[in-house]
Length: 263
Ligand SMILES: O=C(O)CCC(=O)C(=O)O
Image (cartoon, rainbow, N blue to C red):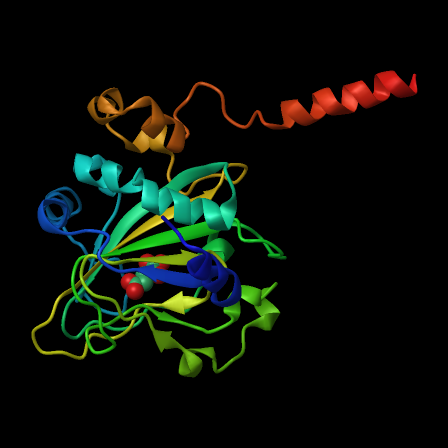
């Protein structure tokens, strides 16, 4: 469960860390699932390098984790992760995307960005996105820990991002099995892996408020057999229910009542 100190850190610093969230069999299942994801990606796309994201092929990118292994859907539905996301976004959330970035020795930094800026135009007065970053290895500055710009979750537009932002970034260091909660407005980038032999495996579970269009069109990208196995709760979290954005209906009822009273 998320405690008051973690809630406060999320508000004041835009992140908090849960050490020891994943261990034993589940950590092994996640690592095995990711290995499978690498094989599937190499087989289907012929490469795990996305040149528009990373400067060289030492970053291995795996997209659409929920299609690869049920452990990834389980992680998305973990109560501790959902509690943390809801502490940032409120009750009504959807899974927008779930991807992995494995930084091998020699990997470089991607461009600094905030995840909210990727899906919502400015201004950004509220958090409408939140990442749960699952660490499958000990993550250190040397092996390419994600770097964040302190206090950047207070930026409201692109003009607020300083030109020398990258120099002021700090690493999120965390032991294997941790998850890092990062609110969507915190500007960040991947670090460089300067080790000779360490692999940094991190997975990015990206949730957003339910009135924002998801990055992935899950109805299209999740195979029918995966959708058929999903629980009702999972379908709801992925936005796979028959109805989409319908919450405004409750407000119309209230408005109607007001109009009736005025009439
Ligand atoms: O791998 C990292 O440390 C950051 C990745 C990231 O921010 C992204 O893929 O958008």
